[in-house]
Length: 192
Image (cartoon, rainbow, N blue to C red; front, top):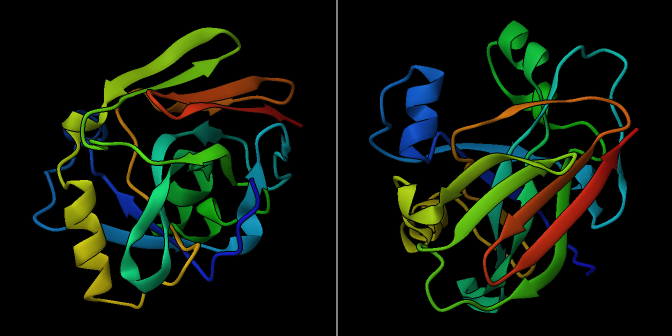
């Protein structure tokens, strides 16, 4: 898999149970933030643990891959890797989510009939740590794309991360984290 997006647009707090887990109210509209394209790695690549962080978390996510003319080309697995301690310290999300290697994508781009009803899991060292379904999303795939398109132009290969379910947690150097989404496959990365 090799893509050339102009941007990665992310939706925060888009799963009901994750919002409850974080102790926040359900948002009335999508909460957007961005990751730099320099954060992208692919299936099998190493996630690099930054020296300035003491807590790096996994976040299993369904990724939308945009096609030409604002249409959806397909979907893939994503891991919205986050330096959680820096996120808490900064009070906003840019530094915590922007390190190189903090946006694993893959293993391939797939077309699915109903992206709003897919099983989604994170598996840490062989143990399931997130186990949900995209039906728990607050905002649907179509609703997310429409909302973002009212804010900015979505170009071919642009990536949209649709939020993570409940069960986020830390990874350590040497860990293997797998993101598995029904009909799409498994994204596997180790932490170095």
